Length: 375
Image (cartoon, rainbow, N blue to C red):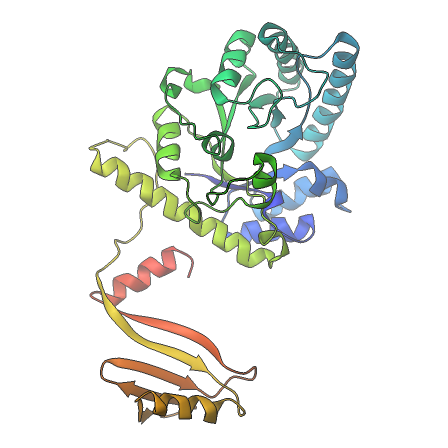
């Protein structure tokens, strides 16, 4: 399936983020408004840069605190919307994310919210754009996907649909039961994020501790499978707010992100296989099957001139013997029984664990799987 990533997931300038996403193999991006504001590039230049990288601009976000407000505020919000639509046209983005309101001015009136979103969708459609409505887990009146879906149903406009975000659903302990009753044409966008199990304010949990799929406690294979079962065929897109990722090198984080989606597709396919589900119509990626691993082959330590002798003395004290020397490199083999340690003297920063090797029943297939996972 097509893959996407929000620019908020990565560090650096907007150009750094886009370049890293393209190099990692993503098909599209969500442009986060703060990244565009901070960029020296014009929206037209961002559009050209994405096109040159082969990236589509799948979503522009966020548009906050729009619906179910008094008349004067609605007028102001519609002016804001027109400005965002102008920007989206310049960017080449066709979908805007509208978050459920957290404004104290918003009222608890589903019919009014639906009326306002219908008006917004009508204006978007006049420009060939779409509106994806998302229930924030901390929304003032709308905080579940079912509530958002009901408002979208009442609004009844072809340019208005749902954005489903795994964090906003799963952080509440909710699931997607009943999603199969939603018109598939209303499933506009899917955002994926994992997270550790934490007991804290959900907004702070969301803003600082999200993870890429497979790195946390959420069952994203079940979640993603349910969305695909319901008929969604758009991109699998990552929206991960994490302080560590935003301080890491963007290329490394982007590869980590892309790998997480590749592995997620495999888990969804395996889940469907176990359930006898025919998924020929869903283009899930397939990896070479993981061969059986029978144990560790060796661990490799890098040492420098100062730490090398100390490591050798320690290994000897632990019962290891120096049993081999590489023919052309400064690498020793130390062994005790079936335990092997390589000591590589090519380091220059003390002692570090440089590599772990495992015994595979099919090394060639293991290598193909590693390559498919971007290793």
